[in-house]
Image (cartoon, rainbow, N blue to C red; front, side, top):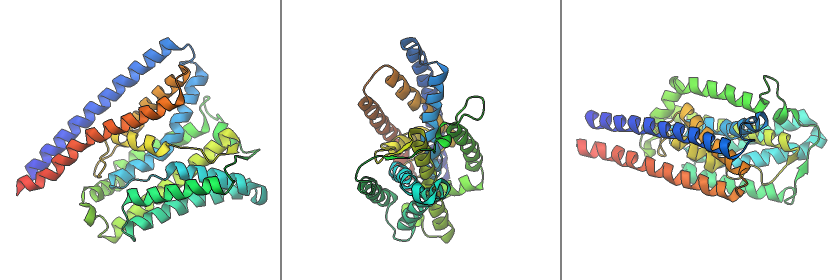
Length: 326
């Protein structure tokens, strides 16, 4: 059995290395194509915008990587971000901006806690639990302000400040989280997440430490989503019910392309960030080329299908190994 598993791991490592090489080549080619197609692609302002877009999604993608290591998926990221943005916009006139920000952050934590408890205590699959939460939050995001945008003056620094070398505060936050996430993925925390993901789904909730760990990951995901909602609201000066639509698909695609497995046991913060960078470059280049925004949705959906196809043989080999060993 150990020989079979080792063979599967070797195939996984080769496939991940190949995927990352392909991503790097695609990213480099995309930069060359878009730089020749548009004189604005390599401009400082556009590169800063590109890094901003990368940061906003990347902040959510880091905890999502750890969740997928543990065999869990969070589909509420975009809806939580939108709802948190509306919370800060709606409550700041009465509570003041600092308290409103804390309430919005707490909202994200509560969403993550509820998702974690649904998965660990109620024994609902993470896909079903977070899909239900996503639908509920999106509905509330439209219902509470009657579908209207909520203007929020005086809350611009978080999303627009450039405190270091012209780099935006959101990108610096993402960079800090990327370094922290990369370190944690190589620590006992990352190893523990992978060990949970390797277990059969029925056994992942058997131990109390595993359940606590999964709940903590969902709370971290909710906190990251609320931070993204605050950043987007700060950038736009407005809380929008439609904010961050599709973020969860982009994040899941990046995590899978970066080396994650849909049923857990593997994931890479660096790989996720590389995949997300390539996707952001292509989105930015398409936008500069005046390609309709709907093309981006098609592109992300196609990439997700490709990522699932890449993941499927690994899962089939993984299931087959114990059977062959017997």
